[in-house]
Length: 206
Image 1 (cartoon, rainbow, N blue to C red):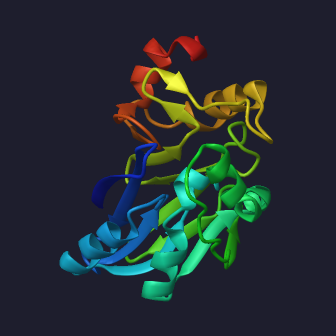
Image 2: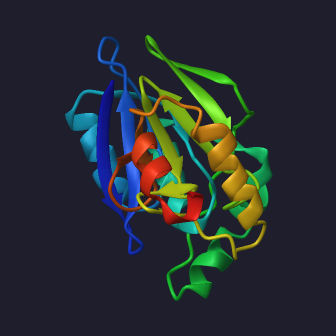
Image 3: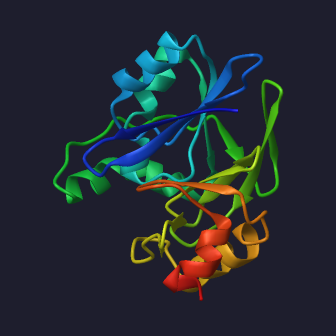
């Protein structure tokens, strides 16, 4: 699997460009900002973007969606539980002292355990509410893209609208920890880790 990580925006979000080596079909995960840079990488590498898939809809993860969506004429895919966050994304941004963002149009919704085809690859949707109601993770080829559900040695915030600490902990333990121990965890901020590392060392999940 092709995996490229682009750190974007003032909150340093990990945007991931993933793709199928054989067909060059690609998906863009959490393009929170720096749309021009993301577009340049996709085009320079000869990738064929099929859709944007977001782990959740906080403003720092969707700030670049509309520009990329309009440029490539591709769908923006999200869990319906986070639609309310798309609707108030600009208010979120200005509350953090940042500029308003352009509201993207959500074209399709994903559900737990749904399969998304990307070239010869299959991506499994894992619904992991807690950081927000519609948080999802995307699993493919022993890689899981977890957004702000899980970090190396930490977990996502649960004090934002729709967040729940107990729900998040249950999501990680019941949905992510059953994955293979050597599964690579790609979080929404900070360095990658593995399921095994977080089982052993994450202080929030003991």
